[in-house]
Image (cartoon, rainbow, N blue to C red; front, side, top):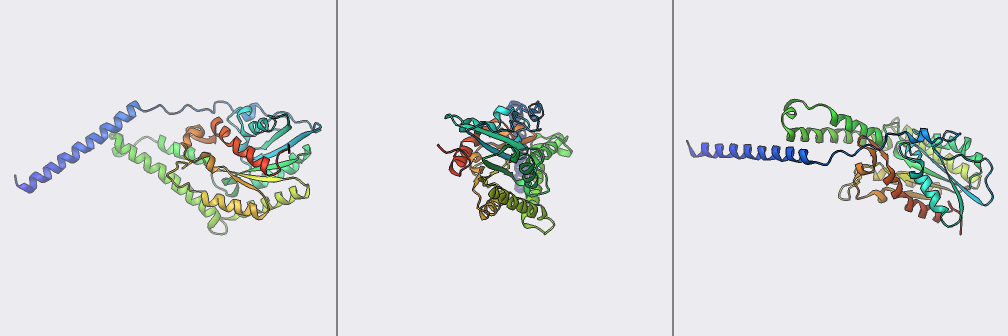
Length: 317
């Protein structure tokens, strides 16, 4: 056997050994990996704990008790807390913190799943104002300004992609299946991120929802100003790509929303810093649903408390 042939044979043997080592390592990790986190969404708490007005909250009295401060909180399913008990929702926890020192505070969770900013404006007009609020807090989520899937639906798509039965070489190689799963996950994520970016920076028809959202924000600011109601905006981030060493893909879009709100004279709180450096799936109600779980709801309360107290959205001492 020639010298070049021996080198080629040695190279092929080395590659085969390396491939077997990688395959064995992947199979070993899969054998001893931590089981997938159990879903926390076995009960639809928003349906079970709905009040007579149809919201995930306690009953509200039409007449405001003397000396009581009422904060109406507007939002979508992230604010509503569909898959968590009412007492674990950040709206309820914020109310408890505000009332911890003898203040009489009611935080009213006027949020519905799937609501966008225009819907939330109507909720304030048709529901919130009926209860003589003293301030209003709008919790903004990015799909309020798009006609795209929300973060939870995107995670569901990724989960469905990963649940597909392996094909081709992935049927016999765990290492190849891992590569394929990673590729499919990246493809869904990259497509969705690109669609979101286009909703703010794309063609006029792609930006239509963001234009509608800005008009609704302007109308909301004008309504609250005409009623003498302080209004604040909280931007709840997409619960993905939170690791400190990675760039969160939507930061510039949050900044654009914040800039528009500040142009209206509204104080804004971005909650992304609260979650930075954390594992995103550990904050989800289920492996296939990125709605915030009880842990995520608890994390935002200190930042919310500081924000509402600093901007006239809470009773003064």
